[in-house]
Image (cartoon, rainbow, N blue to C red; front, side, top):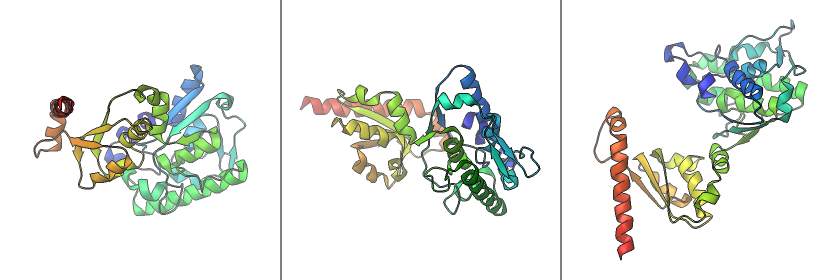
Length: 290
């Protein structure tokens, strides 16, 4: 989703979730269907939108109509004008397509932990915008419940990507799953590590948040099914990193060896990673010699 409707596509000064639309994500799905794809994995992180996936749904043929019978406008601000949902022209190929949504948050659609309150500010929403966006999403959910007989207000992850999780579930029959679970299944990771002597994983920073659906712990959980030791290598570690040892990471290492700026760390990342990996391998070799 980030490639079509993501924050990186909108300069910070122009970000306005009242106006940004997920239409481009719908175009990507339609293009995949045109190419004969019948199984789609959608990563819904990093969005610039808070339109409840309305733009995506419209791009796929859904009619989200005002009281005057016109399509609602683009953006999260237009949800408050929604009066009727008509899926009679929704792309029929979706019925034969399996859609898995890689969703690493459990935020509901609305409320203090919802899409607008939690993720709205990074998309450019002011306090006033957040109230309006949240009200619009709550209204949207009521119309979905009335017209489609589907409850999205209580859906875990419904607030992901500005409500995209909710509409993919309600309109497309998608399943919301942890991203790491989708990736490990697609890679058949269990088969690959079953006979391994060691698994090495990593991410930019390993900290207490790593245990909440991040790659290193997801990989470690698979490895521990086969009692395979796991080492994590990261750009940096934090003071609370010790919690990861309770979740399958036996040892963790930072590639940084001195205080530096972010630009310096990025410029030297490859060399620092090689040096750290070499030292980890040397320690393992020393252990084998005993």
